[in-house]
Length: 332
View 1 (tube, helix red, strand yellow):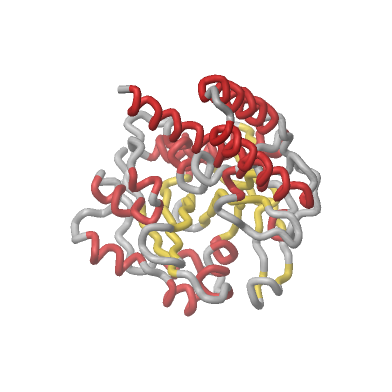
View 2: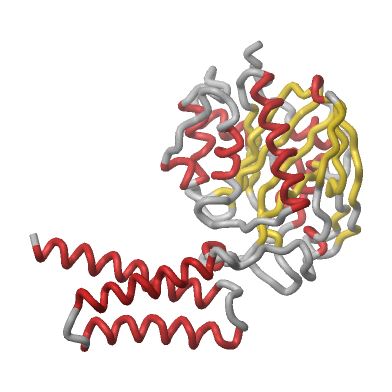
């Protein structure tokens, strides 16, 4: 039992040390030039203490105290809405709601020539909540089956579609790092966009192009409207009080799952949510997608790249990329 306890303690201390070193290296707690030194020193001192100090129990207590201090400092790192943002995320969306009339400000509708060469357009649009009659799941793949970027698109009588992509809000000259995303490196951002923007840039203008699938979700219309309003609530909160993205707990997929919690019988957490590329498979298993055909056939039908290339700048872009897809089956 003592050996097992020591092994467990060793694993806990190792995990704490790795997290602490990562926090010091990635998070904006220190000036960037000091971060590698601080992370290395913390890891080295912890290792040397356990190798050479005689009383392991006291050493473990000190290590736990040091870790607790780092955790306390970590959660005091403030998020901000005032940075030198990349142009794609420079404006925060927010909504005003009067009864069923919803006005959303700072909807992104860029005109792309390439992913980095575009005319920036931000629009204000008004929607009637009573006409929201569909929710589509958009899955974007670029590196195999396991990992995908997941978005939702809300449809209003098949005429207007509003896509929402939960992403990192990056500063100019800042790139995305999965590891950095664990350590308060990026603010959380809701891209609220016309589908010709947020879908088209991925199917057509990003190089290499990404594979985009649209799945029409079945469910009660009231559930769709509650989720939409919950999205708006989060957008308005971020407009007033910024928050951080987290690679594991507050990402594009887990955030959607949390929004779905507002509804009864929301999907339970599954490894297919954590490995986001399998979310469409998971919804199919739960009966939330069309099940009149095998999933492999539905998946092939839902791949919209060719239709997106053909539609490109067309005003009916959203309708054309859905051609041939099974209609959602709202449970009234």
